[in-house]
View 1: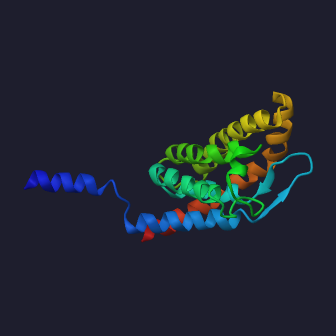
View 2 (view 1 turned 30 degrees about the horizontal axis):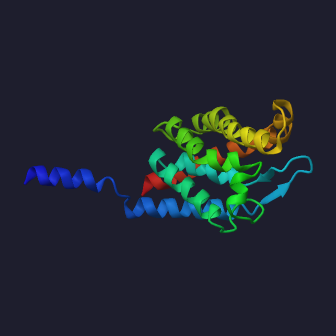
Length: 190
């Protein structure tokens, strides 16, 4: 009897609780809405978007397992055609295009940021993890896809996929850390 109960409890943890699913759904919705706040730069196919704030907040609010599923769900929904990617588009074309590496890398990058954030709610730690790990790791996927799809060398890829976005991404990472501290403190009270 006790063995069966232990197995049931072990199997139960493989599933998400209603509270976890609610948090995940809210984070997906936040990502979808924030993606509409975007604008192009004339010298790159990449967009400046508020989506990176939402992704970073998601990484700092949810545990790694939930972050991966949440961000992968967002990418999947866009890949099947829902117009939820920056610029109000969707479909596999975005994943296979010059900025596809960003989308493909986000679930893993967000999971890593979530692992590195620690257990304590701390703006300084959140900001450091977001700026020193999240931003550079995000650029890796985007840089690779930009170089492959656009058939450019490393320098041209950096100019199109990385350099113009660094100041804004640092500011967005700091904003996300600020928001995540407030959200986590609010959730801690419940």
